[in-house]
Length: 133
Image 1 (cartoon, rainbow, N blue to C red):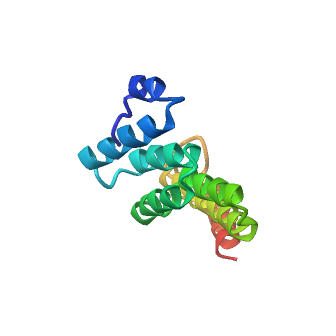
Image 2: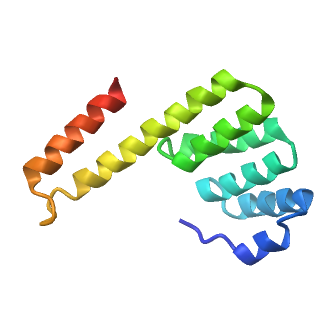
């Protein structure tokens, strides 16, 4: 995952057109990086470029379907546009993505001595059942 140059972010924090240009340049340098696309989407959202913000965040979600912050940003942008049903759908999609991330983390921790294998497996199954429902 690339490191975002936060000093540049702070420099453009209240200059939304400048922030859009900076993140667009970052996206040219680091294409297909969800964190860069998220920054671009947020800058466009703050600059009231909602369709462009949605486009950027959808690109990030295509790259990483479990990008929880992406769903949150998408849902918030849709809410700001007045698309409340779409927004609610994407908040729910974000919760499901979060559950998948947690389940994967628990699966990776099955060999951990802190959580017995059977307990980890049981919790993983419960989470995945709820996600798939």
